[in-house]
Length: 230
Image (cartoon, rainbow, N blue to C red; front, side, top):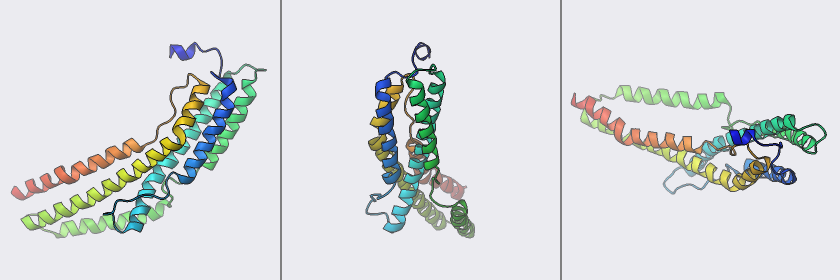
């Protein structure tokens, strides 16, 4: 904090800022076009068209949320540094122009994370969840065979879901790093004293997938076994 307060100019490398800004915008454009398309699937994930759709849906959420966050942070940093630039300096008009361009990025990347309307997602998930609940209630979990079926089917379903989440998050993370890591690091270095470039949400998705896998293979079967034994 003291190091940032001690800086005397709004830009650490004013001669490199304009070029770094253009490269960062180009990298975000490329990521927005290719960041969540053409997913590579494992052989066991069937049907392939549906698996690819779901994996790309997860990747789209991570990529689009990252594009929004990157554009927002760029706009905010440019705005703050333009306010700090003294009148008459060369940095002030450059930062103002870059802030306007970052505002345009926020408009351009204003797209749905899932690529589907909310009523479509709800219309798909709600009937599926209700059907599964009816099936589970219709089974007598007091018998060992019913408990075994529920445990195996539930573990397989959660395993597939976690695998899809991991695959989509990993795909998005790789493409985000490939397209934007170097350009955004160069931009943040040219600005100076502004922390680190934004991170994506792929780690959160990985944690969710690992938790789901743990529940599927350990917690869920253990709860059913306890219910049967007691």
